[in-house]
Image 1 (spheres, rainbow, N blue to C red):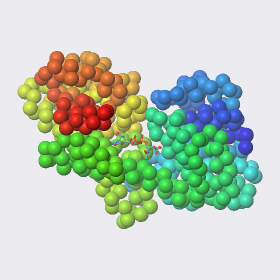
Image 2: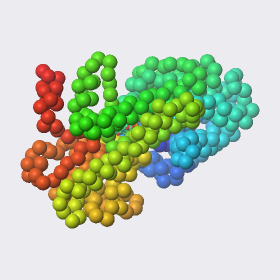
Image 3: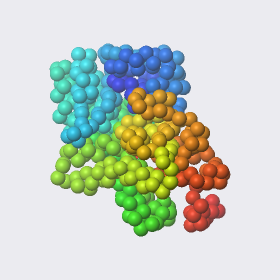
Image 4: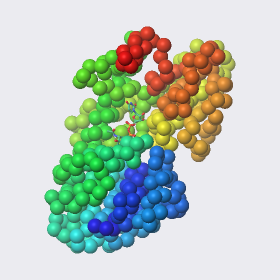
Length: 421
Ligand code: SAJ
């Protein structure tokens, strides 16, 4: 098991290919995007991820990582391609998985192992991937191993979690699971849990759906608390002091390519049995509209003909450069269409944006703002001395949609003092 071909050099494929190479495997990273291949060859990480550039450089310098637009024969093939959502039908677009599988069929040999890491609806490995792979003429089980080992790493902490997370390994048969497990054993400190492919698919979807439903609860609680004039953050902080309560945070919405998408893959498998999941998705999807409404209502209290709103943050979450499904971006693009206001967008993690959005340096935006909307809790925003800043700019309103800015509430301060003691 020396040679590994990793298909897809994105958020998961590139770190995985690099870590495999630095652990002694001979890795070929394959991607259909020519620009990405040339970037990776020059050790330029196409995404902002702590430690990735250093790891990629080490992988290339070791001579164990090469990249190409086409797969070549290997012992193991790992598929890490995207599985986006068909927006209208709310179903998984498996075209990249299908294309990747088709591209390796001519290279498959007896004793090879094919691992699917992409997040997929239940049954995909067995019903979609397997029939394609079987076109090579090898028997599964027996001559070819096939497994689903879903990625579970958190963007922003990918390299640490690649090593420390437990892995769920679903095999088409026991030999497949054991063979796949041997690959991950080489670079993972976590435990390996062996199971069948459909169970592994559902485990992955259940993890992200659990998080989505929990966030939806926090968002619903926020709507209730706001209606009653109560600070939701304090409610959650105190409720979470209970040993068995762990409520997540409300916010301007759920974005990214995983949590806003994967629950639909579970719902798709059982549309009439997934009411909670579907309602949670709607609750989270409605958040940007609520944020926009709150901003517009607050602006009415600022008596100025064309007030300026500084929107802090565009990415889907803090400290990443990823704009996919970003609620903050949706909010800013919507606000920009309002003729009665002037919108300034700030994001230290985004250098340029294709389209109509003009990005502003943070200090300029803060200076000009009549209202500041904190949409993403990037470290650069939290580092500002807000209390001092507010003293110098008394008339500027601040709407903190992440509950991240210092609170002058006596209750919050008391909790913090006690925690620190
Ligand atoms: N969010 C909230 N409130 C919270 C937590 C998050 O509104 O309390 C929002 C974020 O702002 C963001 C979205 O949810 O818009 C998703 O962010 P996230 O940090 O919760 O998750 P992702 O999408 O970056 O990564 C998730 C992770 N899944 C879980 O934690 C169960 C990660 O481990 C997965 O590997 C990843 O999805 C994936 O690739 O599936």
